[in-house]
Image (cartoon, rainbow, N blue to C red; front, side, top):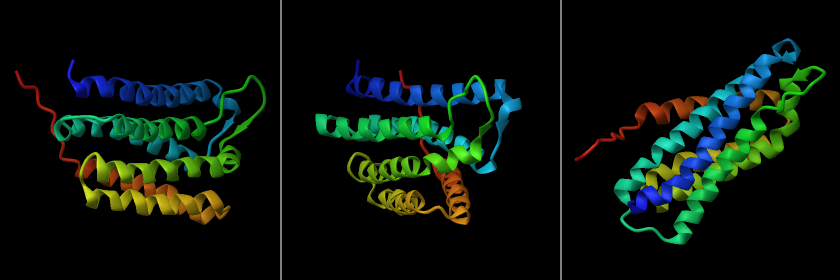
Length: 188
């Protein structure tokens, strides 16, 4: 087992749990869809956090190329960043309940402070990971800027601002994914 494989097993587990949680929450809410009042912004965040998890997993591959040795502090920092993805993934959708209506707009605004605080933490640590582990100083800037916007979202009740940041982060993730040039090759 290579050092990269050893390190990324736990990282993959965290991201796999995040994806599993979001997919399960979507299917649970779909099963009781007659009692679920949807909200487009919440649905957009569901798509965004799903993309975020997948993109984070894909991005781990670059570490197999860039890092020849690992230190525990680097590993802890990476795991903390990935754990934040899991935490905000668990907040984006409520648990399906046995009775009563589930209002996704009400849920969104009831958890927005915690959700965006964790999103900001994730973006700030992504910025640091990009700078220190990936040795890409310029790739540290976009997550830092979006992290500042997430801090503002944690502290505002402004619905227009929340709509703006939801669309903005979604577009940013589309851009990041389209601009990614990572190629995973199998070598014998």
